[in-house]
Length: 271
Image (cartoon, rainbow, N blue to C red; front, side, top):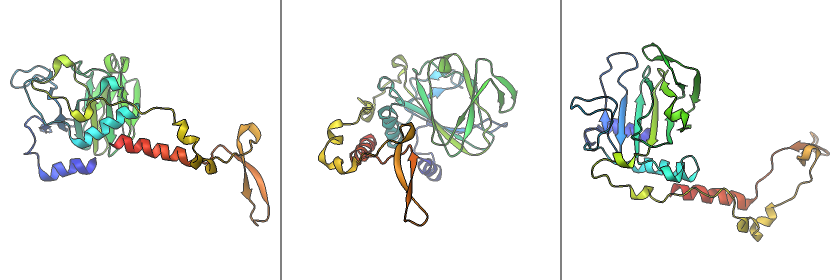
């Protein structure tokens, strides 16, 4: 993901639609982060043409990149996002040290839930119905949630509609991607749904019992006696290897069929 975005920086932005890429001037701390928009053009404030905040339906941006569609399919198949709310737009925020996102509630031009994926470095996101602006890029609120690298934060209900959220000045470079589904009434003129994002369904929770009970899995289905507290009892070699003593472990080796099933699910999710 990071290499993909870096390649855009190296090649340049000339091949992108005009409103896909935005890099406002940094006139003070926490202002002017670089953004990329795919799927729709969203206006954070009234622009020079008089367009109000929200999706600008007569402005075009680039379609969703293939790599982002892979992420979306995984989010749905792995039960992170519901199949009724498959994202069809996203915004990439590229932070430099000191950049921030001020307190806000995401526009209802986008349906709920939506989610944010974090890359490069960790930071906090602050929630509260009344967030205090302490200084440039410095905000105070009742709840701060850490966003580790690779994490996905899903916003829904009061967390998306009542509480405001913000990202205080980040200590180092960071990239986040917020995936959202547009309200049908707000779709851009001429918008065509992505074929690769249609009909995605979550993977089943239950394992295929037929495969688990197949003859191939039997050699790996060794039964271990239960020791105290219901934990599996094994044998730990002594230092001289001549004797051993019982020990208890909550871990057990998974049968080969189980491992095969997990690999199959991951391979399917990559498709």
